[in-house]
Length: 167
Image (cartoon, rainbow, N blue to C red; front, side, top):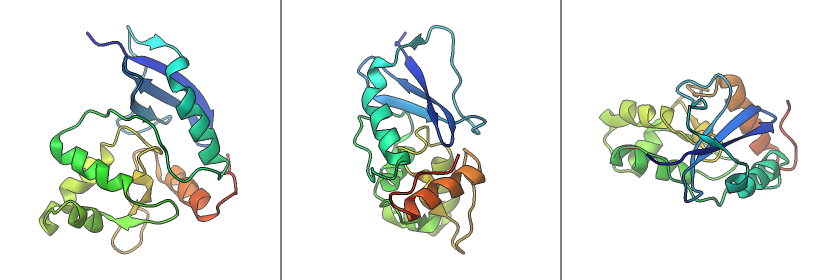
């Protein structure tokens, strides 16, 4: 049985739950009410120690001072999901991409756009892995496991560098 460490952080988008393995790599970041989000399980160990860098970087992000997270990540997923998540990491701060563009970046067919959407929806590292930057082909704000209000809040923060996100 592997040890899971966790901590909670207060943020403008709600109380975040962060988890990490014994090596300190971040395995998940969930927001309240998140579709498929994690909840504290029996046997998990509360310990803010492994999350100091994440806490500092998240605070800087919400203050409009950080544009790229530099944290060790270790999210579990299929090879396909991991390829999609790497493509998410390549969407720059302050920009958006469509599901079709992500599919193209990983060499998937247009028929695979639905599967790409499923992989994006299964992203266990909200905010840090920027799935909020993915929009519909028509520019619409579509699907976000953390809720569309949070997605808009994060995109608004990134569109206005230096401006803190509104609570």
